[in-house]
Length: 182
Image (cartoon, rainbow, N blue to C red):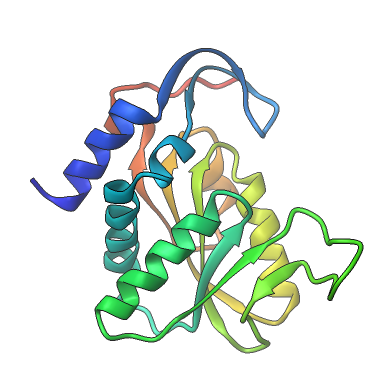
């Protein structure tokens, strides 16, 4: 079984929930992909790191990260995988809003003007959350080389990210679910 196959199996068993849900986009859905049920599982997070490595190792970039909360464990997993493969890499996360104290930075970690970065997220519907992360790192002067998510719900994210190299590890169809447009 490949790493992708095993991660798909874990997502199907642990992350998919059915019922009535309101998504971050505001859309209603009959299913929910609760990635946190997978991202905080030892085997799954190791697999996520390896798949993020495989989907970005062709790039020359300095940092990987995305919007809190989902991208934080993903970035840590990717950093660990890159280190195992002998490659140095920085991580970051983007706050949804700046704190009222401390450095008051929106982007935490090492992202500098001129850096080439990969932006990651767990589950994308319309792409609004990942666009927030992209805007924050681009405002620092970084260039986004690729956007990777674990699951694209196929409800508009690809169109919203048309200006970027967007590569989901899975689409919702990989879990046997047809996307529904609200």
